[in-house]
Image (cartoon, rainbow, N blue to C red; front, side):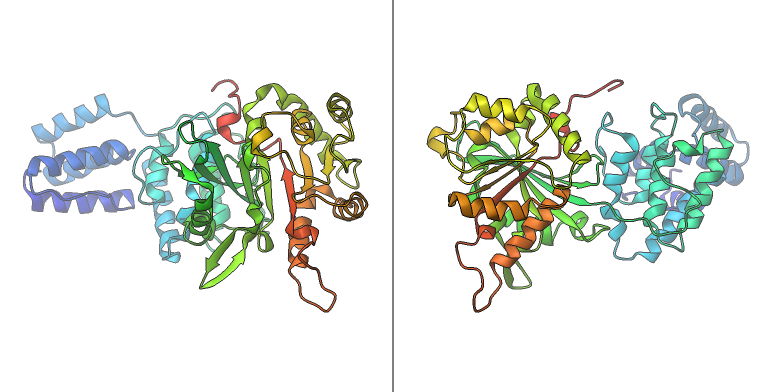
Length: 469
């Protein structure tokens, strides 16, 4: 092991035995080179035991080999997987990587890792070059509360993304591990191993939070997540530098055009959610323009765009009512009752709060915008609706004739409210359509803000951890 050429031969044999390459950096100093190899042996389960077997083949039962074998048996835990099964898994992953030379599959594994380990475990805390690294990390994480090893949950999900040629092989591998370890196959995360149909892709959400900066009131700390279905979100950016609101378009353009996990998402559907403090809730963010291929367009005509309340997420005291009203709305989404307020001061605030605190109505429509920055700290009808737990609030930013707004919002809120973000997008598209008697600049689609606050998808920083976390 002292000579670099000898180490190269042993490393090649080790990688062949493991079924994958080891990400080793060559160093000019021999001691650093050996230390990099030792580090790899500790990071990849089964690698140290494999090296012992290889050394015994090369050098027999020499004193140094016996001493190294004793050290490994004493200090390195026995891996969870059988050597042959681990090698089969890594060979399947290598085949998947060869079939996807663009490495688009790498965009999904942070989300699959998060799904497998749950919110109590940290995000990937070491440099990850490939799915081999993720598998090595997951093999060392103990099973979760329902008895499912995170590695099996992860591989079961990878099978869904592997395509029709590789999926059966990943499924067979999972079934063998379930049988070998005496596990309950039904506990795996919602996947039927024998299913042959293509699963329906889940909805994708690009969540952008703008939190006020303590030092500069007109600047915001921006965090962005990509969330698939109701799984924990994968962080895309978490800026240390506070940004002004006019820099949000540049960030959005980068996320939508250059962020691999967004561009390479499995399903085509994408909803953009802005989590905003009260002073920003009335900002026309759906009118934000981005440029793709030299063409500039508003995001609100390509994606459903909604806003969510940062202040309510931070105010845990109102979460019970919010969740209760959202659950009621999910079960009564077709043509639900709507609380329509056409004039400021039409209701006393306490009277309005009393009406909205019941499970129904869970939808509030206002013909006028919230108060501006100068009175943002005072309660208005919008703030009362948020405190009452109302999950859906729609309003016109520039004010509206009461009768006209009542007619427009009645058409908008008809049918299934769960599809309201998409109908709002269609309304924004219609506002830009041309024609002899086509819509003009006063069309509601150019002035509508939709707060659509899913109480089942609160970002993790605002969710109370439950046992065992």
